[in-house]
Image (cartoon, rainbow, N blue to C red):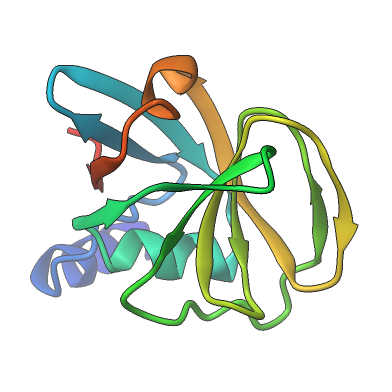
Length: 134
């Protein structure tokens, strides 16, 4: 069964290998940051829409946000708080969120994943390319 699914995924260009993590990279010039995405509908929806180039802007001195060009499918995903180094999706506005200070729980805030490296550098950037990790 796994082999059959792997063939289907290869045919349709899906990179969600069975049992593997979804890893992405934020790149700006020679600055690079790595993120491991959660196994949620919103994270899968985000991953499937990569690559994308976004402009990051500061919001309330606590987070960087970017307007996504698509709405993510977050049906069934739990809402969350925002911890330092989290990557989130603020569903009411359709924003991608990078938390550099903690934020309390908010209904509609969906955690997409966690930065593994490069977080301190990438939050200083204004324009980023987000792509699937190779």
